[in-house]
Image: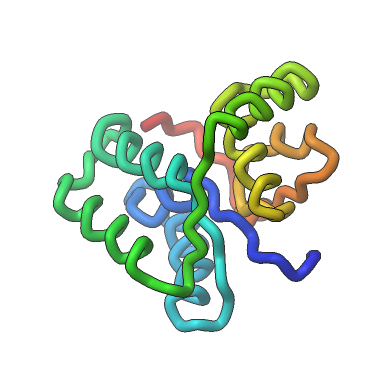
Length: 152
């Protein structure tokens, strides 16, 4: 690890609320608890927060109430233990280059371009394809969790 904060990907945030994936939920909770306790600082992109809001309110079997999602996002935004990062038009241009060069989905390329713009090189995620970008280190906190066939 290089000492800069790691970005927490959308899937990590989503598992905090996924009652069907108890082991991943606990791992995600424990990971984020380190930040809430002031033991570590993480980064999160505004894109991650937006994706999280859509996923847990619209794309899961048991949607989370919007007021709960809003409160969770507000807590992250308000807490100094989280570094909040955003992107610009230039970041979007960089994302298009990353997408083309590394053959990854645009939204994933945008996360990576945003990370690079803010000097971040590590991401907690279960999305292995992000590792196609050589300058990015993907940390999968669930690597020992048995894969679930459930779809949400």
